Structure formats: C-alpha cells, structure tokens
Length: 200
Length: 200
Image 1 (tube, rainbow over the protein chains, first blue to last red):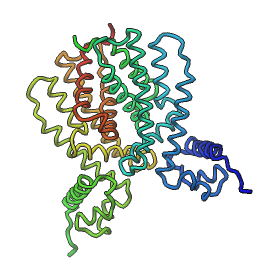
Image 2 (tube, rainbow over the protein chains, first blue to last red; image 1 turned 120 degrees about the horizontal axis):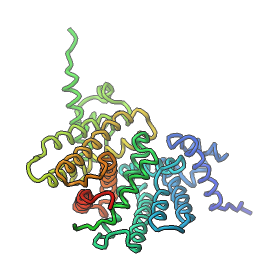
Image 3 (cartoon, chains in turn orange, green; image 1 turned 90 degrees about the vertical axis):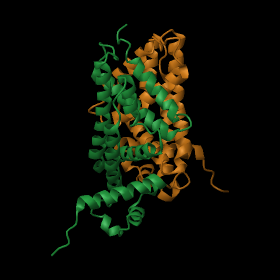
C-alpha cells in the first residue's frame, strides 16, 4: 500500500520551518538548503513545495498573509471607532520584529514581481488584502462621522493604502528615521485629517 | 607609456549603456553580459565598475538619481506655488515609461538592501534625495500660507514622503489600479489637505 502523505499538514510544517528561518536569520538566509535543514527534510523533499527563490518567497508570503489575517481577525474591536481603526491598521505596519520580518518578505516579493511573473499572483493577493483593510478603515470612519461626507471613499482608500505601504517601506529601510512610535504618529495625523472636508 | 583612460567618461558611457538596456528591456534583462554587449565592451572590462547584481543596481541607481535631479532642477518654477509643487513632486512618480523604469531600479535596490549591505549607502542617498524634495515642497507650501500653521513640517515631510513612495510602489505593481492620472489626483488631494489645521 502506498504511503499516505497529508500534504496540507506537510505544507504547514514546512511553512513553520520557513518562517522560523526568516524570523531568526532574516530573508537573506532563507534558501532551499537552510529551510530543509530546519525542517529536518532532504532538500529534494522540498521540491514538491518550492524549488526557486520566487517559489520560496511566494510560499513564505502565504504564511505572512495567514498570520496577518489571524491578528487582524483576533483584534479586539471594542472601544471608540477611531482607536479600533488605528489598532487594526497598526497590525499591518512593521512595528515589531515579527511584523518587520513579514514586511521584509513583502518587499522582496514586490521587487521579484518586476523580474519574475511567477511572483505576481501572490503579490496581488497580498496587496488586495491590505487595500481591503484600508477600505474597511475608511468605511468605518465614514460610518461614524469621522470622515468628512464630501471625501471620496475610493480615493481615500487609495491614499491610505499608499501611506501604509510607504510607512512600511521606510520603517524597514530606515528604522532610525521611522521608528515605530513615529510611524504610529504619522498614521494618527493621517486618520485625524480625514475629518476635514475635501472642499473648503 | 601606459594608456590613459578617462574613467569618468568610461563610467558615463557605461551608465548610458546600462540605462539603454533597462529602458528597452526592463531591469530583469540588465546583466553584466547584456550591458557589456550593449556598450560594445568585453564583460571583463565592466569588472572595474561592477561585478555583482547589487553593484549593477547601485550603478544604475546613480544614473537614475542624476536624471531625476536634472529634471527636478530644470523644472519651470514660475506660476502659483501649489502648481509648481505638484509638478516638482510628479517628477518623482512613475507617471511615464522613463520614470517607471527608474522606479523599478529603486524598488529592486530597496529590496536588495534587505539581503546585501552593499546596497545600503546608495539607497540611503536616493531616499535622502526624495525626503529632501518632500521637505522642500512642505516648506514652500508653508511659506505661501498653503499649509496650516499648526502642522509640524517634519511630520508632514515624513507623511508626504511615505505617500510618494507608496504611490510609486502601487503605480509599478498595479498600473491598472493606479494609473498616472489617479496617482496625480491622490497627490492633489494630499497637498490640498495640508491647508486644514492639525487641531480642529
């Protein structure tokens, strides 16, 4: 009888090993070889899941998205809307080591889309997730009268999404210039500014 | 007598060849081999200027910065401050093919900093340039009464810089969702919003 392999369980096991390497040693250290060693598998056994550096990033990004969604869903939504929205959006910024590692994977995958089309679907999925979160934030503020009625929700979603990704990028690239408290403060300014009418 | 080589001229010649490859075929096609062929040099002759993919991106970024600075400096500064500021900042967004190619180099170099420290100095230099441009924009608007007096120039510079880089990223990754006219419109909304006081 052939051996029955539970591919979902194996996949989850490998995702955890991938994440442990990224978390402990950084994205630069995440190779087929180092992840095989971490998982206690032969490098050949990984081929079913990934064989190129793009596959590896796509695979790691899947894990990042699952973790971010988990945090986003588990977030306590009691309290004033303005504060809840801020907390939810901060889950998406690299304000601690785990989220910084997640953002590293995101940035490397983003760059990879420019040179390898195989990276594009997963990147689009990830970006759609962030855009959706920005849209929910804008809708929640509007529903509570915290966004001026003449502001276009769609344009404000695009603007908030750009701000979030720009802050994530700066927090990663220049942690001295954009430490966590400053990223939070800039986000605060931005959300507070939505209450002003678009037209004077 | 040893042959006298004008390294600055050779360097400029190579930068132009690098740029032609990137512009015509994209960053993915820019390799030591393809650039040597474009310049009509032997691959070995390039070693003096770059030998790794990071070196190549660092070299290409130098050219990108020179071009952006040239456009930024040449920009017509006559007319209402609000319009001049918008035009200057749009020089930094990937609103046409040349600027999109420049932004590709920027994104790849940004990702490279996460896995290769050799990419960091040039990236910092490039980011300092954009931050400085954002600071000039904020100062010009403030001087003309187009930014509320209680807004902190430093925080508004950080916010504008994050917005610009986020818009550049989205224009590159999702040109369908962030076409040039939408990126301009989001920037317009952002700059217009600065006139509202920080505190109600």
